[in-house]
Image 1 (cartoon, helix red, strand yellow):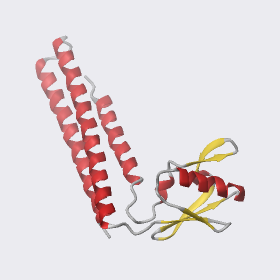
Image 2 (image 1 turned 90 degrees about the vertical axis):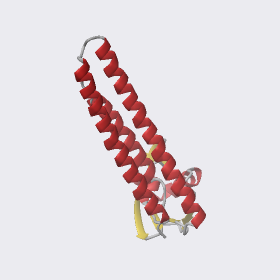
Image 3 (image 1 turned 120 degrees about the vertical axis):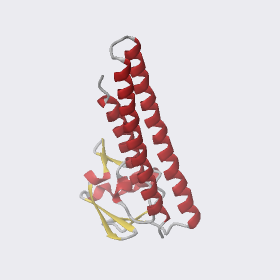
Length: 182
């Protein structure tokens, strides 16, 4: 019995969590907060990075320079409509996003959010483990695999689960530290 499909699902869960973590801002400017924001570019929803040069000139500022000046208003509208909580400043040539210094309460709130996303991912990993173990039990009952093979496969599934849970814990710890660092 092949357990690689279950490992693939675990990898995807971890990747989704890491993607979510990128959008949690820690007081420093990170251009990835713009990744999910799209601008209407001649009727086509396009990521900001696809219509503008995005740079980080200072530790707490993102600068967006559209290649087409007519997009300034569209980009501003998209940023305001998104939930990143930043107000764009436009000087006619570039749009600047200034990241405010995070308060202690906001840092704690973000740390809680990081832990919650991590715990949700752990639950998803455990659900994948349960599905895999159910498949092993079903195969064992149908005499497709022997009882010993079933136990070996379940042990492999548990090793995979432990590996991904540890990776999640490490990611939670790293992101929490990043968020709490002033």
